[in-house]
Image 1 (cartoon, helix red, strand yellow):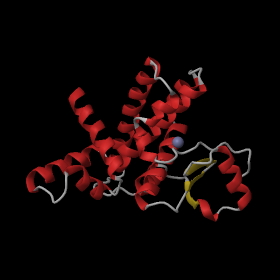
Image 2 (image 1 turned 60 degrees about the vertical axis):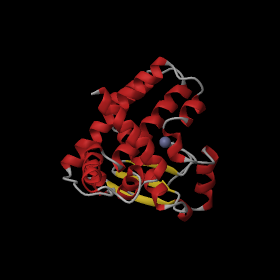
Image 3 (image 1 turned 180 degrees about the horizontal axis):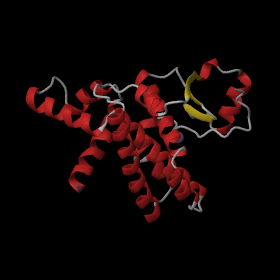
Image 4 (image 1 turned 90 degrees about the vertical axis):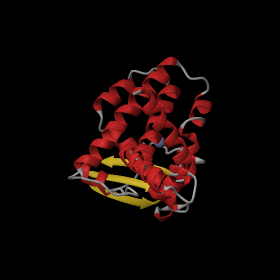
Length: 225
Ligand SMILES: [Zn+2]
């Protein structure tokens, strides 16, 4: 399948990817509106529910969570993981022209799903980038989400919401609610050598920053329920 310049790639968050999850998007976007906050909250919850559903349907019980459950969920599609540095120069420069700092792109072409990622970063960061792109792919197959995004007049606001929700998807997928609960029980029962967030970051194979943000969101969610 040719990857040509007519293809629209969505950008992954740029460095430092996980830090953008909460704060940087807002500064990138400037001030946040009520619409932004309401929609981000709604769609974060929606895609967290989807993650739980995918894990249930694929009977995923172990972590660190790999990407096979997503491939199983997208049964019938061919999944291609493409390392950025294996692409021909022409494609590479056209990707970088769209966004110099992006570390991942995705493309759905019929029954083929392509995830292009920078493989010259840490394994944890690559996992986050790939999960973030999967977040966009799930968005792309969600008609209700797409319709809601299309109703937003401001490109800047729409993009900020889409990126924030994709980051949240990545965090929820790599460190899912039920597995955080399991980790908490283990930590309470047996304790650990390191602070809780660090132990969990290792268990889930995510960065410490990603885990910190994810755990804060997890606790906030619990308080609201
Ligand atoms: Zn993105």
